[in-house]
Image (cartoon, rainbow, N blue to C red; front, top):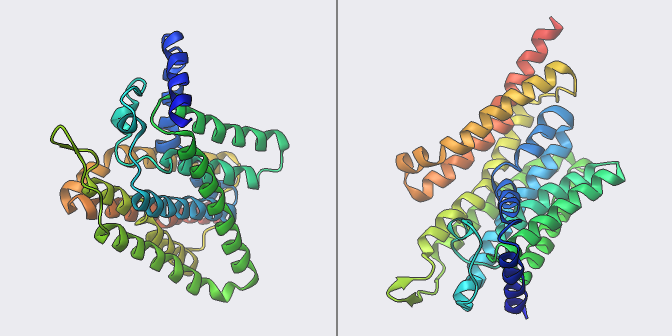
Amino acid sequence: MDITYLLWLQDLRNGMNDAWTPFMEWISYFGIRNIILLPVFVYWCLDKHKGEFILAAWKISQTINSIVKLTACVYRPWVRDARIIPAGDSIKTAGGYSFPSGHTMMATPIYGGLATITKSKLARMFWVALILITMFSRNYLGVHTPQDVLVGAALGVLSIYIAQWMMNYLDRKPEKRGLVMSALFAAGVLTMVYVTYKPYPMDYVDGKLLVDPVKMQIDAWGDAGGLPVIALAWYIERRWINFTPTGLNFKGVILGAIGLVILAFMTECLKDPLKVAFGQHLGKFAYQVVFFFYVMILWPLVLKLFSRGSKS
């Protein structure tokens, strides 16, 4: 049934001469590369607590994705059925295992997190629509089955609920912050150990390994490795910086925009140099350190210093 659905979408795509393909590729690209700028802006400029919630939900989701994906080890649709031909350049960014969809598990906690903190019903519908479009784009491009995206969305929603429970728990018992952060730290580290030492299938086709387990481990070190880093950065910020979001005034928006431009540059340019400097596994982890220390420590410190300057 799932392959039949993908073949139907493939026929639809071919019949339209790939008219929708560039848009679907853009939706997928934004969902994995630029989407993170949204909760970072919330954290810096709108509501620190809500920004922390969405960032935590994102990293919890990425950790769950690593555990499930590298436990199930499900091959991509075109491996299961050679009639599936992914659209455009999507096959180049869709390596590794298929289940659950990583793009969906990136989009759901972020778009869904934004939906939970938005008061406007129309805005909530917009964020939910973006989740659904992201899910559909992965099927339309032929890189994921329906069960990949449905389970990915369900696990993303679970991540939102876990993050909500965690934040509500800390609101009631702020003295337990150290315990919660320690739990996040341990969960991330244990996941990294698990994906590194567990066995993987070693299936070959025409002398070529279908999925390189080392590459999957490297990706997981980036996904799950962010969980202990965000816990540590969160603790440092609350303990020694404790900044206040700028608000949507002119100065605050400009400072937030400058910070996002720098972050976008870092996202594009730092990953490869860090891999060269520290190796594949540690390079992925080092990027998480740089990312979260910039987002939760360095730029909040800049915002705090500018806030002091405006009051003096």
